[in-house]
Length: 124
Image 1 (cartoon, helix red, strand yellow):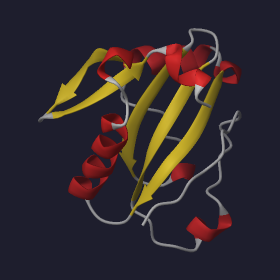
Image 2 (cartoon, one colour):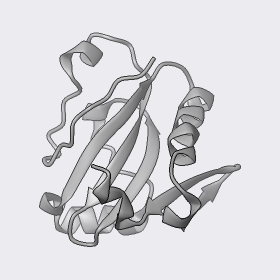
Image 3 (cartoon, helix red, strand yellow):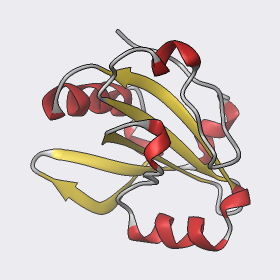
Image 4 (cartoon, helix red, strand yellow):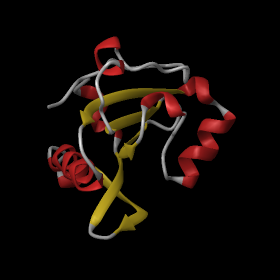
């Protein structure tokens, strides 16, 4: 089961009311840095409202300095544990062409999180 969200500009995020009443356990997200023109796709085991940004130190520092230049889109809500979350994250990564990926230093246990080139903004 998945849910789709809209781009959010402010960090005072709230999951759509449908998902607040559901027991989702995690979500796959896409950050867009409007200044650097980069995307960051990742997954988080937790709630949207728990203020998690991402595991990238570079993105976290940039977000701390200029949160108004970032947009967040929740791509999918997950129901289950880490394996379900990582599978959902990988499904979204598999939709991205290899030439649109910039491999980051954040590669763990066979799963990878990427910064995505700005070519994706033409799709949205």
